[in-house]
Length: 165
Image (cartoon, rainbow, N blue to C red; front, side, top):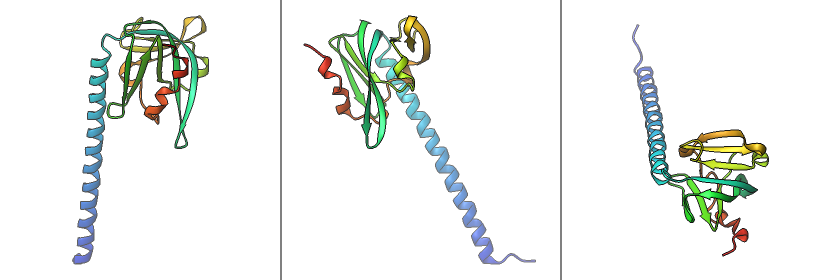
């Protein structure tokens, strides 16, 4: 029993396609891991000595191209920086501090319950969110916080009406 050359060609083509797809997936996963590691190093370096404790005064929903993002407007109680601004798609990071006010990405789904935020104070390397009576509701590493999500840079000005020079 001999295999016809067109079946053999088809089989070899299918194997080649599977190898190509597998290689592509492995390459993309590796690139994604490298980007995550690069972001972690960037955030850890940039915010190594950064601390902030504040009250979440307002949660603002921003809609861009039909996708919703939340921004938290925070009245700063204690912070290691008086002024700070970064909006970087490359490093997926957004944070603004100006005149004792801060604006950060508020991706938590239960944002309406949150009252306070602690960044790198009581729990080093962590962003801790509290409800009334300082009960911890959520905690996550600093290097996975402050993402840009679907925000545009102009969205960072949304709380500027609260800023008084």
